Image 1 (spheres, each protein chain N blue to C red):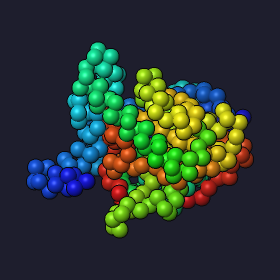
Image 2 (cartoon, rainbow over the protein chains, first blue to last red):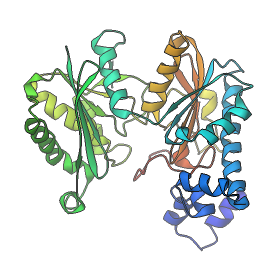
Image 3 (cartoon, rainbow over the protein chains, first blue to last red):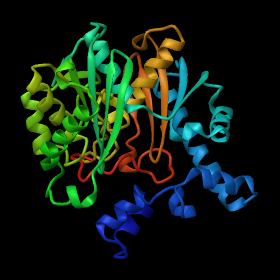
Image 4 (cartoon, chains in turn red, orange):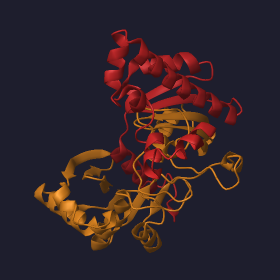
Length: 135
Length: 225
């Protein structure tokens, strides 16, 4: 993080630009100029080694974060659940599985459905399965 | 059968859906061109405009608003709260309008839900906003006393899939431990310990794995971040 401090204070970037370098324009898009993971995967499959290095690094970091949470839970993990848009990417999912399935079984629920999730929250309360909370 | 209106406001559109129990009977996305919403100084000022469009859309699709029994909106940037379904109260509305944690389209969810619900004398709710905070004390330390780790993540989807996983395992969510990995433009990895997310990386702040663009959502400002 010293390097981040050096970069931030180098005078080359405004505060907003520096924040953007961390979130918004950081990660895959910073290395490869695209945030489209379908493109990234295609380039990997076409044998682009540079792209593959970055792709592998992201998977490595995701697996490490899962490992960190396994430690936070004292190793008592009933399942690992992969979700969100990237969970549609079978290659990515398989590569993560290879690294973390020693911890627990991996379940995959691709995408996200916010409308259904909101509905379910209300249904649980209306059916008295859960008590409504007050802010 | 309870009829539920779901309202999910984004920066340039409002998604709505109507369910009879769990069955979807209507769904649409109302787009808001820049020239229409650009005239509002703050996002929060758009609530009446968006509310009227929602009511109009329901009427046009022959859904009588007095057939509704509850309204739910996407939760906004409130003060940190435990996970769950919350009744929208005046105090909550006040915080959403003030933008206590920032001005963001999701703040409109609860406000519009209550405005419509009040017309009909039915309850309004929000569910699992991004500010859900169930973090263990031990996870709040950064090593720099003036930087406190905070819980801000894809709570709605993390909680929803965690419940799905529990069901699949034939267990109660409150009885098991899960690691949930939400992978989108930003990635949040949450340690779910017997129904509570006791630790989660703050992707908004750049914590955790690097991602396609390392962002959760674009918040204008996040207090304490």
